[in-house]
Length: 155
Image 1 (cartoon, rainbow, N blue to C red):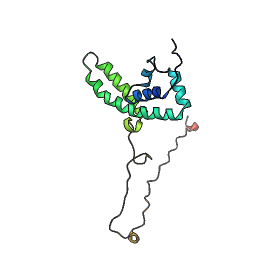
Image 2 (cartoon, rainbow, N blue to C red):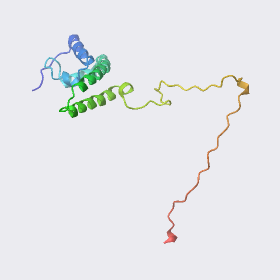
Image 3 (cartoon, rainbow, N blue to C red):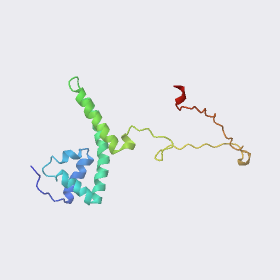
């Protein structure tokens, strides 16, 4: 059964933002009959840049709340339901890594990554700039060429 048309107002927007910020998944909001449908929510995001920005911030903060719930969820596991709990935790971790990869992602940050907080600085201390020797070119070992062509005369 389709939900009736619900008009967005500031109170409704604030409720949606507050619930997402508290860690409630967006798909759970659509089960509430007082709130707009999934279609109306995403249309509102597409048409209202300010609302979309508020939703993005709420999701970021909601991810922190969901992360905090992972420990609580793990504590509820017992010998009968640990596989189901493990699946729930893994699913939430996967979603969190997609929502905020810099904070929850598995990817290691490398020093040459433009988003890396690591900076490597090499300085020669105690030598005047003029006294520094020219950098020497290191020669690489020469490559051996291997002919991998098939010789048709060998047959």
